[in-house]
Length: 257
Ligand code: ZN
Ligand code: MN
Image (cartoon, rainbow, N blue to C red; front, side):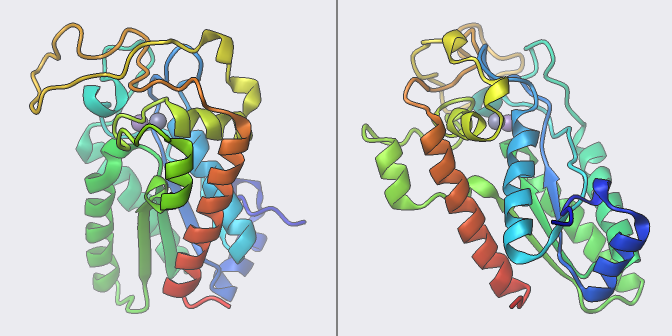
């Protein structure tokens, strides 16, 4: 089967996709700690895997992932103190996403989906899209549709209830926990070491931030909720859920067959 990854295509193969109006998915990730048991690339691997699954299902292609994201925040990613957590300033992230989208539009892409895998990126990917829409309008492009989401917002209620029988802690506190660990066990089991999973209690934060963050707010491992019940089967169910439901949303919004 022909590849869906832009990086693996020749320029004529890519040009052919642009001629046919193929949608382009742009995964946006981060380089951020994910506990003792998972690598720094989780927030990039997961939206890339989700995007690749969707692309195969709906006949789209996937642009190279943006592997850095906005600054890790203690309450949702553990914060910047962990060795290896390496982030863009907001203006850099906005520029990176805007530049990539503008060039894809220049090549002929008119259906573009930004698939975000790092909580802190949300508003900055929106700003990039707002600016690129203005760029496109000034270039006289009038038939552009851009879709954007955090993939986890598509988690079905019944699946969430099944995965969290004791109650769902929220997507912010789910950092390096059951959802991400299960998906990594499905997508890249070679990069997960469950023997090293920390057994920290759930992180507790006050309803404000301090800069610098106070000692004791972030568990030493960087995992913000217990992840002991993560497994590859849960990851498979989540991946299936995201590919089906984000795929259906793209079919609808891009008017695909
Ligand atoms: Zn993450
Ligand atoms: Mn993150």
